[in-house]
Amino acid sequence: MNNLLIVIIVLVLMVVIILFNNSNNTISNFNTISTEIIGNTSNTGDDFIYVTYDNDITNKHLNNLLKQAHILGYSNLMVLGQNKEWTGWYGRTNTYKEYIETIDPNIYILLTDARDVVLNDYYDSFIEKAKKMYDGRIIVGVEPSCCVSNYSNNHKSNNIDSSEFRYITTIYKPFMEKIAEEKGVKTQYRYLNYGLLFGKAKDFLNLFNLMNIGPGDDDQVLLFKLFYDNPNLIKPDYNQELFSNAPGSITYTCNYIFEGNFFKNTITNTYPSIIQLPSKNWYCYEYLLNKLLINPEYTSRTMGDKLYGFFMSIFLK
Figure 1 (cartoon, rainbow, N blue to C red):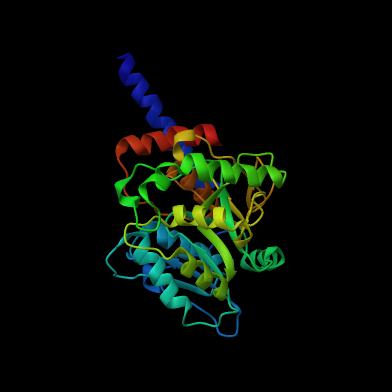
Figure 2 (cartoon, one colour):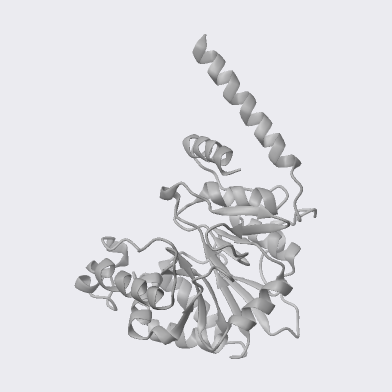
């Protein structure tokens, strides 16, 4: 009997919280847009293009991003990779390169992942901020944890030999910490993440050429190496002004608070324009989107994941 009562209480709490979430006001009081519009929605005459990659145009998280882009004014958007076979970061990077080679080298490019990214700013505000921050270097998002697994066979490559890869955490990680300390960074936002980048088309072509990515390579590891070889190539967004990378799911945290129409990073007290939720931090992803978008959709998860996200959402409010 006691167990039944507990189950009933939990179910009632779930219903109450779901209703509470649905009743919250958001800036996204627009009709949802269908997956048919996924693709290039670019305007002519602008000096900016938003580029992302997803080979499955029906993915719900991609559709969330497209809906946000439509609502917030990011109209110059190109989704690459449609219906392509996934061949890892190698294939994605080459697809980026092939496309960017076809456009004006002075066009500004926002390059982000597609499935774990949330827009936290209007386009006009974002582009004004981004152009002010840009100084000829690619602006790169910075995360509070490091690094890509250095034991994954999928990430071994010709460009990074096995011994160098094995010592990522003893070579690149200390180097990134050293550079951050020299810049006066007081937080743990010290480690490069390849999911959020901004620069000009010519900067990205230079980056891709230097990366010289091969099959099986990890793009983020190559970014570490390039930063180690030439730290002036990249401008890390240490203060989370333009880009913010949430902690991974293993930390059980979501350090953002909703103020006005958007979220503030409670560690840096800044309002980043774009937030990435790396390492499958889906409960934080859902927490943000439930405030920013009417009727967001989420990919299928196990019941355990859903219950975990539900209980975490209680503590994240």
